[in-house]
Image (cartoon, rainbow, N blue to C red; front, side, top):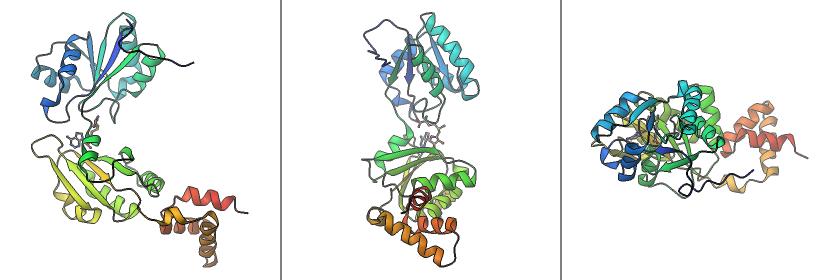
Length: 284
Ligand code: SAM
């Protein structure tokens, strides 16, 4: 059954999702300050971190903890508070809650329980990076952090390699060289923008080819976002199913196994292994 929430035309208690600054504290909006002051409880990813923000704005609202490791239990506690008529604000350490931060399960449960969920606008690092990247913004895919395991990263990058949408990743400085090498190997030497320390005094944008950014990557510090150009290869659009299958056959004739041939054609064309495999399975 459809659920409609007219946020400001009902008396239901509300869970506010409050975006907090990703660096520059001046970016906490008057509306966010007002909500943080007037809710009954603020649920925070890290209460010590949020305490610093609240002290800066002289906000005295009660804080409770809501992090990934206690999300299910804490969500039940928050629902009980809502049932008792309390309004709650959810914040993370920086940017939007739920964007690579806790809150997804909570919002799912709170909406299922029929309470209001109201988002407050603010910064998210990936949007700041995207709009200043100089790359296409009409369509993009936000991928968060790549998996640590080599195999999973490879799979993820193979999936997105053929896509024309701009790709956005988060990364930590100690992994940046490794990650850029992975991007270079799996996606080719695409244009990209590395945006670091957004909204802070050392904010910097490095725009260039992946290989060029790699040359200086080991000197880069701070928080960073990677914005990578989507696939621009025309081949992706012009190959028919029959042409793809013929390419696989020609690799097999050279002595490759079917799976190696599919892998090779994926590399040649930028088309995902899955897509080639499916086409090849159902060839006439
Ligand atoms: N919820 C946050 C958001 O909405 O952007 C993201 C939280 S995630 C745990 C932290 C990652 O976000 C960092 O490792 C970095 O990749 C990115 N990030 C956060 N603040 C940033 C900043 N000021 N400049 C660049 N990247 C930032």
